[in-house]
Length: 171
Image (cartoon, rainbow, N blue to C red; front, side):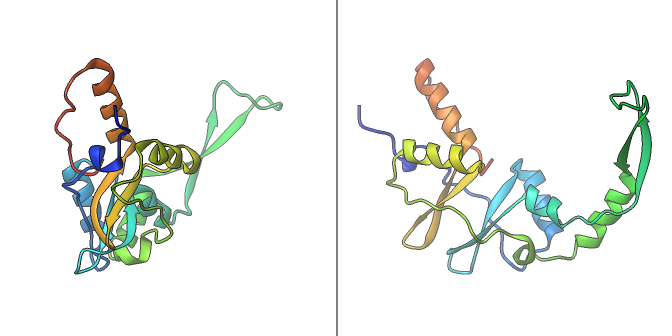
């Protein structure tokens, strides 16, 4: 049996973002499409970055915290305290970044692969670099995305002899 290639497993129907979209718009797309990140492309479909939920969360600035006692205590003093950010503060912090553009929060230093790369090589990148998705480019243009979920679903399908389920955008 020939080796599996990225093109055999990648998502072709990809949720994409533009650099000038707001983080609110991106978060709404993530929620509606049930994905946790998406490639950012220019007008010609060339990959310019990647935005994930983690990138959005990194933009949040929180300062006010409540201190609560934690039971049972693991402190040598017998009483332990832990800081909690309030829900209200998180909502305010999100409102503060809602106007930011995708281009201000996206990751530009990213891995990308060609469709003819072996799936084994892609799996090594997922493991070594602890990433969730790899954009697939051909001739500089985005042609798909490979996610850890795509790989697992493919491996499960091959193990059980089932045909791979219909792929959903981006996960």
